[in-house]
Length: 66
Image (cartoon, rainbow, N blue to C red; front, side, top):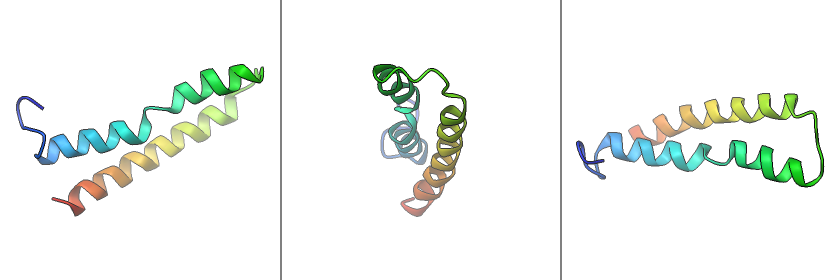
């Protein structure tokens, strides 16, 4: 943010990506831990796939509002 600024393409893209993917491991750790889910293999794969989809959409949204 210091180099390019908050209103730059890089700044907006970083904000969109961080906002869309920061809760993946929080959900796995806190929510699944509270109900004692031990096998999170499929949930982790789905969450990481959703993160990739979020990344692709974030790049598209950043280009849209460029």
